[in-house]
Image (cartoon, rainbow, N blue to C red; front, side, top):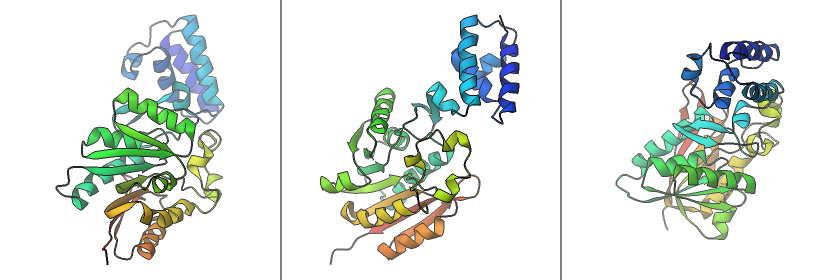
Length: 289
């Protein structure tokens, strides 16, 4: 039987050899033994059962081949909560937590004193944004949409597990809302914004395993924002807040689009913790003539 230390030593060198993150070994072993990483690191000399080592070895081999750690463990942390993830949904990123923060702060600024706001998360994936908004603020009545039935199923499971009240609708972008003549005060989305050209530069862990339809538009990375501009007038209320996650080179292009379609919009491009453009927020007021 191997000790925790021996198992981690083998896994780390095996993963380094393939250019993978050696820290994945700790995450995978902690998951297999159902313990926190801190407890695992304090148990270096404890023996591991043969069954646990074999299961751990299989997980390490999967990551060695490029399968993301989160798909192997089936979970990822987002905004301090554990979300279930699988190959049908994008793995939530720390940058997207900043999108949630932008929605919360901008909603306070754009809608001061408004108790109830109808918020829609478009292309919800795992449900990370929609569920977090519903749990972080009682003022949001949250609806989430996705074109993928598998993604919606995953998002519903996460909402149920975490006790979030979210309505789910299947459909492409804003079409399900337009069909039902639903209006929204807040629209948030992390759409597929990686260009076809940039897709080639991604690590194989992302490029070959995460759903391509959630990563790229198969063109210049701006196609979904262009579609949003055309569909937004049909779903936004007289006053609306629109928040998009963007690629770090897309701030000016998306800001210009807003000003083309909504000349009076108050548009801000916000940077992420790494100092890169990551979020576009637009406050839109429509004046009835």
